[in-house]
Structure formats: structure tokens, C-alpha cells
Length: 304
Image (tube, rainbow, N blue to C red; front, side):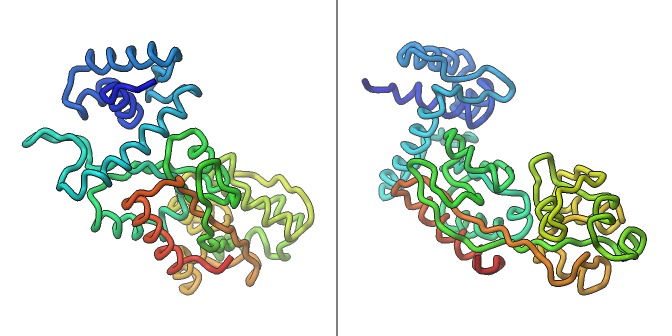
């Protein structure tokens, strides 16, 4: 069975833009035309492929087709590039980016080493990045769902159809303001003081602080928690005495050197090994991105 290319393009655009109207603008057609193409594709496949929500997402049946559509787009760009051609775009009108690359990355990597890799790829290829920020322990799920073509993840086992390559480790240190340490840890850092001192977590999935406390005390503690869902906000929470937390050493090194932050237990750290998982597909842009990611990671991460 052959899939109509216009229907497949409409399907990919709806998921990329998050709505039928957004897809219509990107493809320079009417929302009605997009709707008809999606309806025709769903009838042909015999499945509902798009969940009509805000934003639109692929149904379980549509996830495999979403991945197929993105892979075809990568291959098409490589085939057309020697001829000076790219993705369809009307002359003189704003159109879709030459090549949208959907990636998953954890917030701490995005705030430290990952952006230089994107900049290096942007300089060499006409691409537009769609970044999904997700905890490193869960980002591989987006690969499985077909929503991204590559991810920074802590999972060493490759998702089916993907390659997993080690990048190094992000080193985390437990830090707080000097005043916070004097107030909550005057008698030392132990199970009792850690159970009572406020602690910041990124979100409900953030287990770094719990892992650090278990390593020190061999106990499962439940201190008061602040949820601070932002890398720089997390640092500010520590600076202003809101709570202690695990922060990337590369991000707080200057603040530790100046004395604005101090380590709860000097010399104790957690290393989180990171991996680059990407589709097993021959694409010049994806190869370039992979090389840039390794170079950027090698400059900031520690050996795993």
C-alpha cells in the first residue's frame, strides 16, 4: 500500500505545529484541505492517527507513522540537496523550515553544554530545532513514541531502531547558601538535619536529591520540598536560601568559588551518565548533529 505524499506531509505538519490551523499556515493551504488530507489518510490506514487535542498529538497507531514521516523527510532533504533543492516552499512567502529536527534534552544539559552543538549544526545546515525538555531518565520515551529523532538520555540501552552512544557524565553537587547551611546544618549533615531542612526538586520525577541523601545516610528521607522547574531558577532558589539542591558543577562552579554558594558535603557528588540516542538512519544533518553533540559534551562533561 502506498501512502499519498500530500496526506503524509499534512499529518507530519499537524503534529509538528500542534494544530490543523498551524499546519495549514506552514503548508500554505487551507485548514479544510489539511483536515481532508488527514481524514483521507486515516480512512486509508483504517485507524485514527491524530488526537484532536491542544496541541494535537499522534495516537498510539499514529506514532509509528509519525516516525516514518520524519525519516522520509530527512532522506528527502539529503537526496535533493545536491540539486540545490530543499523542502517545498513558495518563493517570497514564509514557509516551513528547510529541515525540522525534533530533539529531547534534559533542562540541565540545555542550560550548559547542549546549545553550542545546536549552533554548530545551524551554521552548516538549514535546520530548525524543535526541543522537548524532559528529564534524562524519561527522555527516551519520546523516541519510543516517535515524537523526536534523537535524545539526550540516561538510558544506555538503545530504543528499537536507534543507536545509543555514551557522552560522558554530568556532575552534580549539593549546594546551598552559607546562611542556609549555618541555619540548618550547624551540627553537621546527617539524617536528622537532612530530614528537617527544606530541599528543592525540579519536578516530581527528580530523584537526584533523594539519591544523594540515601548515599549519605542509607535512609529514605522525606524533607520539606520546593518544586522549582527551571535550571536557573533552581540555582536562584539555593542562592536565596529557599532550600538546598543538586546543581550541575559546571553551572555553579563560579558561585562556589566566590562563596555565594557552599557545598553541603565538600567532595561528595553524583555523576549522571548521559547517552545520545538517535535514529539508525543515514542522514547528513543527523550525522552532523551527532558529531556536534559529542564535541560539545566532551568539552563540559566528565568521563563516565
